[in-house]
Image (spheres, rainbow, N blue to C red):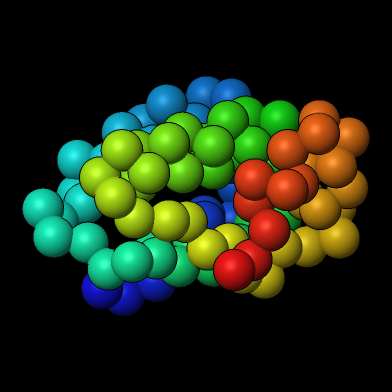
Length: 91
């Protein structure tokens, strides 16, 4: 499975559609971990964290894990502020 990529912009208005698209496109058989590249994310709000946590939850339900790579310092700071950094740490 190719790594998923966060879009450049992920704000509240796009969050639900982004998560729904990823969840519906997940194949029935998943690898032990799915990689998500967050390096391209430039404009975002806390909804980006909701998308990451929602994807993590969907993957966990299917027996897989989420591995987030390329988190920008700003995204790391926001995840730490909200207390979810441990859930999004790269494996």
